Length: 211
Length: 211
DNA sequence: TAGATTGTTAATCGATTAACAATC
DNA sequence: TAGATTGTTAATCGATTAACAATC
Image (tube, rainbow over all chains, first blue to last red; front, side):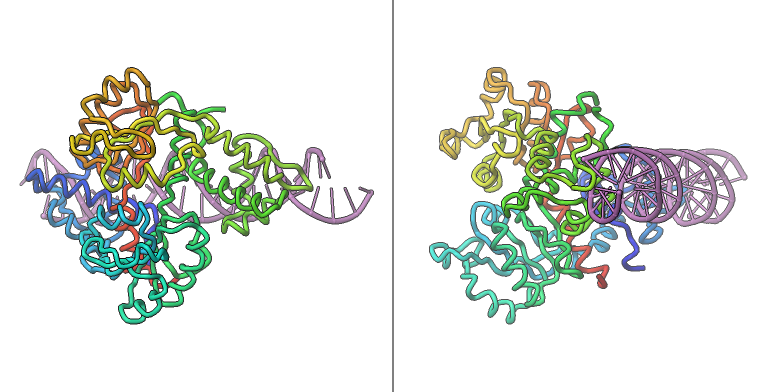
């Protein structure tokens, strides 16, 4: 096992996790691939194929045990292994993410907030002080964050990403418009490109009128 | 032409638009598919295939004119046709999106902000008053928004989405954990599932160690 | 004209769906 | 046991890459 799982499969796992969580919350304990497929709007084949990348979690003639399957998928996603994370850029967006996201249920622990604006430094958000980016090196050498969240403009992101990669950061949750991806091979990047997503919606609204 | 363009192609268009914008800003006026491919980390074939879904924008022996190509892609994306949009849910996230996003350069015009919390109603953000969701029907019948941004929890999203679809909203930028997608055929949805993205990053950090 | 690079067709690759034997 | 549903192999479909003739 290892790195042979396709991106398409990995990107679907969180959605499975979510649907199974809802079913569990509704008190349902068992489901067939056929029924789950129907609820999710995909095919039963795809579900069985996807799951069997990681092992046989079902039982013939019965289906899948919902709480067990959810736990397994969470484990595959590594959300039970909290990874230390810092956030750079405490503007509107950074602040909202800090407040809004439940990191602990998604595999991360937010341990530091940073901004370059001196007027923000020292403010406390979610029980953490906003630190000066000047202290980033020191903080990282002491606390060894595995991941970083970039809520800063493109130009700043280029600089900071370089610095963080050198400090051993292995993964980025990237809200900037800087395409980190292929500049640092080996580093994992998940892009949240708001603008790209909006433009895609614009296209769909103006085109494919039917269905 | 019309609805025969694959999602893969459409999802790549905003990134082309972004890269061409940067090249234009750098004062470069001309580029070959080979060189653009190199900069973007994709193949030249893919660029030529993608562009030729919409027409021949290049010139043999020369390449592509950067400003012209960017304008064309913007036009394809429909970002030169502003679509009226409302935002529901003025918590941390909704507020950040209102402040942070440049809607006008991405095909949208934000015309209304809504929240159910009476304590927020009347507050002014970006020169717009936060309105009560009670007034949503009235506002939509008067202003006919084409799109809506959902920054509310799943349960609220289910209700509000139903209401908005009935009021003629044709597209959703969805930050909630409610999977609108297949409940309303014909309605366009772009999901921004923060949690899903974070979990995917978690997987990548814990797995595919090499490269 | 010769060189470069597109537009486009053909070949390859990967992902999704269908089918079915294994088995609970 | 009979019925149901998985795990898995085979078939199909779609997307990406390669190749090359057209043409600026």
